[in-house]
Length: 293
Image (tube, rainbow, N blue to C red; front, side, top):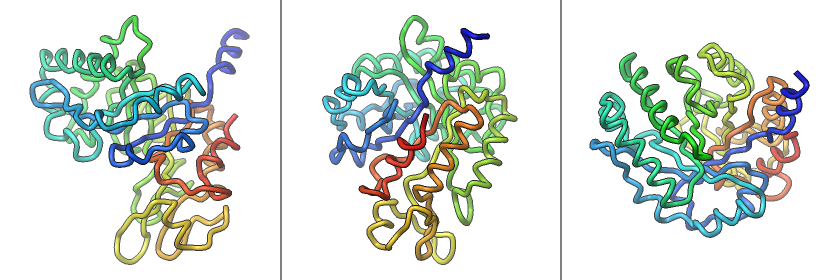
């Protein structure tokens, strides 16, 4: 029991942040301060089980790899994301031979770009068959990582299903705690989403709470804006979560969500996405770094 407690204390609080390809050229080291992992976004599956990694070629790899030396940051890559690879995931996941080809392609990408693992982001399986196949796909990749220091993360919405017996092949289960209707990322919805992920079978020690670095309108015409843009357009205080028609998470709410993650003994938090933050006292990343263990 004592050894287990000491091990738990030695595991750093996970702070993972996505860096999408459309922000790659503007990447600044300050965006990654305190991050334990940067997830570059993204590659996507092809129908033959290979990967389209063309978007990965445009990232500032020298800067990203320097983060490993400076602060021990792991660099992984996302597979999929909203409309990327949506049509091909079901085809590849359903066929054992294609799953094997896919696992080899993931390892080849990790070798080529010197990456520490992969994040699965199929949005979304449409039926029980696709959900079951998704579990088999994650298993195939995780088993192909045997003997290598590579991790798998599964990024899901709170309502999303995933086979309970396949969660063992996910080092992390990342909850997208945002994009609800109305005020899209309230504390109340976050608690409900975490309860859903727990009911799915994810352990606290593998669960990661996703937080938004952007706002969405909760009345009037639907639109989105980066938190940095909202902070530049309105005079904000750290406790503010609304401005104009926008709802977002300000520093006080972000810190409260980090505190919630700590209280529930979660693995950490995840950010979508690191290129959207404001600078100075309103910085959300700074709020996370102050609030984390």
